[in-house]
Image (tube, rainbow, N blue to C red; front, side, top):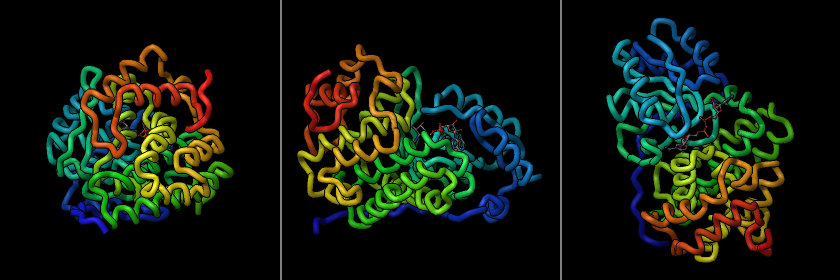
Length: 357
Ligand code: NAD
């Protein structure tokens, strides 16, 4: 057993079916009575229904949450927070909506209740990635960590099949990197394994039937477990690459994680195959990287950077950006190897396969 330091985060978690009805009591429990409900434009109807359910406890809805948390959107929402005298935010949606709530909390220290409807896991972390002038910068602050998470499995039944798969792969990515990160510890490694196993069970079940309630419950539990890993320990190469590709090339978040994960995992498997063995085992595969690639392909996930909007001409700049301020990584981040990894991901080659365009 290697020595370790583990800092637990303080957060209240309510998990189940139909838990949306508890949000009024959660607000009252925190002494709050003027909540601003946040959503994306696509989830405005759900936000309306929640605001109606909350009655006088909700003072309004801001529905322009946007991926990668652009600072100008946060400033627009901040004007509403001030004009309505909101004393809290209730973020209903995926990571984009959670990100907006966190950005408001960072500026105001207002309490947040998050109702996650995807598997991104942001609700369980004190981390915020904000984008300004094409650069995504990550901040870590206790003000960013939401006070309460209300997981209502019912709300995930509408998550489209394709996004269920990519969002689930996004969650798995947090747990994979938690297994080998520099500050890994036994509690988080156990949670990482549980999260991966739950999602490996759940995603094929939901892929076959998006109304599979047990699968949906497993997947949301897995998302919480994997998100908790992301909040508790540092990440490495995989998250660095996705951060660069999302922030500087505006690639979609969950899809980018899905395409990159098998390649980043295979790259690091050269150094820490022992730490990645639980991933291969959960997948019933010989290797973690190859197993993740096969798993994603079997779920009809996007497999190439090309199909999610990357230009081949930008791969050099992406490799440069990734290596400019590299995260700690178990396998050294050599620029030419990272450029090759991006090429493999661009064309969607299976890790370890012969390279031919
Ligand atoms: P998202 O929140 O943008 O959601 C994608 C789309 O799906 C949106 O239109 C959303 O309204 C819709 N949607 C979500 N749940 C739905 C449901 N149940 N039914 C129908 N539609 C639904 O995407 P995401 O992948 O969840 O989040 C990505 C964002 O989260 C990125 O900005 C990323 O940086 C951030 N993130 C941050 C952290 C962190 O710890 N800071 C962790 C993970 C992700």
